[in-house]
Length: 263
Image (cartoon, rainbow, N blue to C red; front, side, top):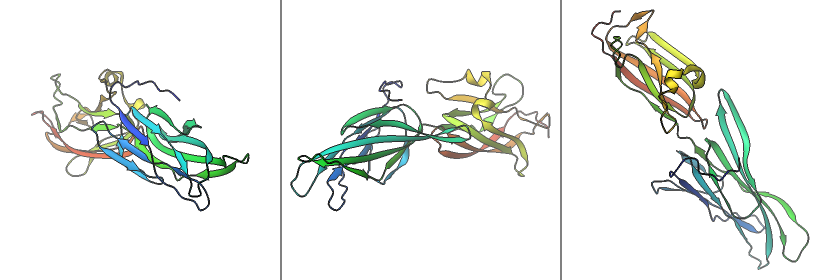
């Protein structure tokens, strides 16, 4: 997965790991910090142990840097190791892999996949004048989420077989699974769908896919028990899991407008 190619064009978010003092008694201190810079110029700084509170989109540029200091004036040689651990949703299964592992003080990488990421920095060191290496220190991980999932719900359609807006559709992008319920004003369930999006979508849905990877998926033809429902207001509740493992819930009303609907 160590691929520095930019597969997603000009959109870029910069993640810079710079300087944070992490102190252990009697141990040289490596300096590490994560600065997340969005494409709009907003900046989020993460220290070891912190978690990002927002999701970022791909591609996500990651720059990693570290240094080591001491209070006793001695010179140390640092043996650093960066790990980037990715957790992601694969259908109903949450998977994890070692996305990146590099043994250098400064490195950079471009993330082109969705998921929940942990940046782990560990190090060993030795005195410049010694041949003995001291092992086994690790800084608390920094974490962030890369997930550009999107759900758009629309509030009207007209199932009257005139070939225009006859089906109720929703827009999905980077969504792995859904639970969808449509019900009337009395709470009666009119339509329900659940499962992996790839299993639910049809070739017709796939044909609507746009340049961002999103598409319209048909949810309801306006019928209940084989008959078109009466005109009026209905309600939809969508629970979903994004490609990065993040859970979403969206609600909306749906106006059925046919002029000919029957109960």
